[in-house]
Amino acid sequence: MASFNANNVLRRNQAKVAKAPDGNGGVYSALKYSRLLEDMATRGIKYVDCYGVDNALVRVADPTFLGYFIDKGVASAAKVVRKGMGGRM
Image (cartoon, rainbow, N blue to C red):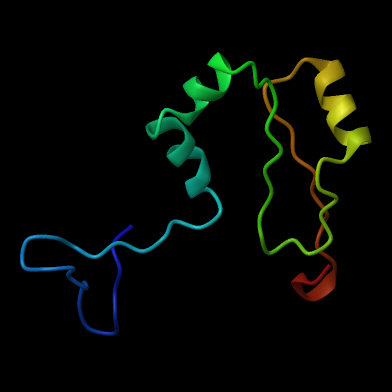
């Protein structure tokens, strides 16, 4: 994603546009394009627990959630919390 200031697209140099991190979702494309998914598969890694760093209440590698996800045989799963009034949880 290109970086912007109030008036312009920011440039890394004359030939390149500066890019901003693409948020928590950037990890997925990074895993694919770096070939780490292939590397993990060759090492026998079947599951990866991934969560946003801004989730202070996450239970890392929650055995109940991961067991349910593995038992169901799905490709991915997510826990969500409905926001309350005013957009707060």
